[in-house]
Length: 478
Image 1 (cartoon, helix red, strand yellow):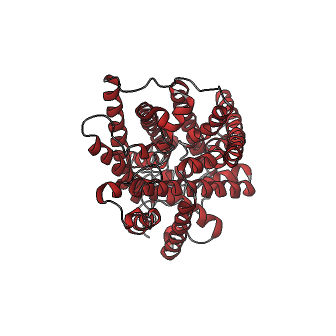
Image 2 (cartoon, one colour):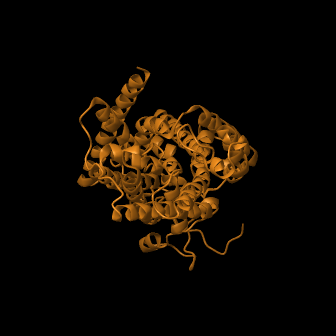
Image 3 (spheres, rainbow, N blue to C red):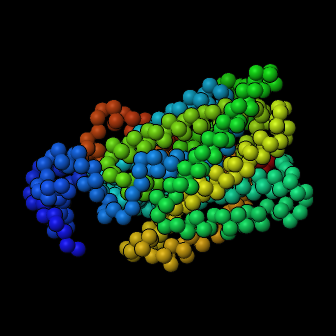
């Protein structure tokens, strides 16, 4: 294509100065950076200030603004995990529960910034690529396998919740039963299949994550609606003295209580895992630059901490020792206040729609990772509509089968939290920072300490979670 701009004179592969923004050398034959206004040479200030210039991850094809990126990243975090938090609060107690929600949020934000920083340094366009740059190809394959297991587990949980809410479960009545009485809609597997085919598949067929910005915004709004309703109900009942005093600290009085404690901590760490979507969201960020993505991450963290803390506290206060692993199923009975039935419907149906809108965002990174493992070296997935559709159909089929075999969401979260989520959110980012920090963008002493802290914490949580799960299964079989 003809251009009115002159090619920038590149000196030593770095615009005449050393390593701008830590990007490394650029091939003069492949890169011709120009000043958009003058067409002349760029100096250091031009590169630092003109944010559209550093196209780190290849040619830009679409863009989303900061708030679109916030919605997509928030949607990657706030999904089914929020429904398990009141149950973890029942085990941890209010004080330790709130502390862990805040601590995990802060650590997750730090690890996201590390991931962005070193992805830019090594020009990685995906989670797997930055892992390979730091730790080698074998570790990349391992990380991508963990992304697949984690995301598939999360999507299975979404379908389980949708089925439980609409069709009911052994202990809870479904929305359809309350509306229409017993009928074909009691068959949970059939309801899930219909939702999957009619609602989820068409949205999952989209091939760019920025196409999901509007659905992500709607899903965040629905999550906030759920939090507000639950918090208001809990406040009203608290004022009326209809809430039992909650446990403030964990119970160490029995073997079962200690095992429960080991199991729920990985669930808490699982709540903030969004790292597999960080690079795709960054790739499509308008005027992308690390500091813009840092802002996206910080806004997202504040939103998620507030939403998580409010949900965990209000859900536990409302149902106390009767809090289910999926607190959404608790909203099928009289809440003891006016308009209880209407509020129950609003909470349950609103959150089902939230999950329907969240589902495609998690599916996007799952499909990208599967494509990378199976079809490495081929053209990008967004350029092969047929391959995109085939992968979408196959993945959704496996997710559906998983939802018919796993009994409840806590079972899924126990294992994905301990086996995959902790490593994706903390172990790999810490190892990446410690390894690539020696080659450029050197880590400060504080960052080194934080990296080692995250690595140690992730190791302890993973081991404790796996041990707790094994003993838990053994106890159930006995």
